[in-house]
Length: 608
Ligand code: M6R
Image 1 (tube, rainbow, N blue to C red):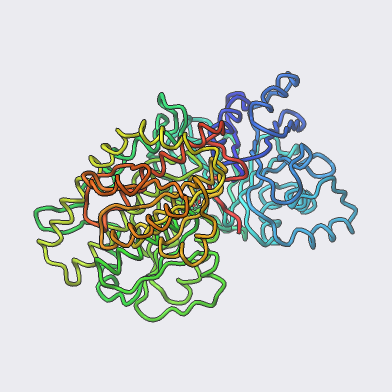
Image 2 (cartoon, rainbow, N blue to C red):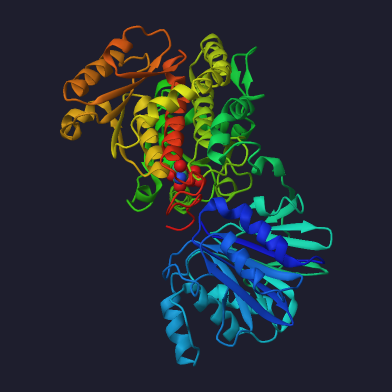
């Protein structure tokens, strides 16, 4: 979604801001802009990529200064135009503001401000916010931002500066992430740590309803009611190389191919083969609750929802606890009933997805124990849960989530085994599963060695505009994920569903040569999947089967086969999804799309 970078220090701010914006490009945006403070305020904005902004900046050579703010915008209020891009100013051009999030009461505020004679030139909520700050200003920017924050509802991460206080930046946050990086004689404020790490690894995340005033002597954090607070300064673990392409053509490709390594990292130190148990330090706080749990509710959106759906199967199968999975956006609004001993698991790569965060708050307010399965360290979900397990897959830059999905499934598998072991599972049964789990990274590596074959199969069908993905049991969510990946980046229409559901309607769609991808690996429902394959082929569908190595029968019933190594059924999603990720990637490349910047998509959806 939108990205914020701000700089205050000794160096020229512009190159630092531009470099920061480039590091945020992966989040998705449609326009960009910068504002520099040097005597007065100078603002330059453009529609399109940061490179377009850079070109425009070449025609503004006098743009200099050591304090500035910058933004990549993803339109919410107002169309994609230069005027609507950030930074926004008040009508006197004394204040500038960059803003992520949505101000919900902006139209009421706008009316009041108009009555006071303020003039607006855009349709944006952000222009209302900067005007409100200007209206409340009495010679102290920090106080004006605090006062404005007390009047707005909705979500925001903002950085503001004012021509009357040229050496000051004021940042504030509610419901949208914002970090302050502390360097030697410089500060970088950003909505994402990837824009900070090139300058410093010391940083803190602003809490909700907190404001931070920065000048060259230091910073002060306070609540919006002006009570001073001490932020928790941490070391960012992110390495700069992790955010770079490292020889790959696209981040998505890099992230698919690094899955063996990152999943080894997810598992590292957590499988105790000797004692036949899982060691998850993040669960210590709720170990009693896990033993007593009577129900798990898993909640998430998008790809994370698909891994949560697999978690539902895993928890019932391996921990024998009733589990259900639901879209966070639906869960939070349906007056959910939370009984005693319910554990809610929020699954999220970013830890900032607005719907997931709100669902979590809803469940927690109704008495559930909360558990986060999250990748980004220190993100909002990790701070608002009773316990949590990190994915440890490193920064995921590709908008289409791949390695985070595998990390989520691996963590949910460990949580299910851990819970089962605490309740009834024998050390031997557990040890057998752990041995199998340990082999998963090597098996993923074997699948990646077949990438060329996946590419060949995929390229034959990229002109087809409708695809089906079908699976049963553990592989029903994998089918959903395969379809989501394909549509996200190749813009091919794809549906994923339980294989049995096909006969209840979607079979009507199957016509000559329609690609139908079956998850047909060995498992409890293998024979039933074979019947679904026969039904599909007899209607002219072109069957691409993901099948278990050594399955000699499948070649006679499918048109094409993509192979995965054998493994116990509960672990199979960790393998079967990989060919589908490759398929989506190669389809998008062959159709000439920008894989890492898919149209209309944002990496992290921090508004409802
Ligand atoms: O950061 P999260 O995991 O909470 O994000 C959830 C979804 O927005 C995300 O998975 C989205 O569906 C991706 N584009 C999928 O590739």
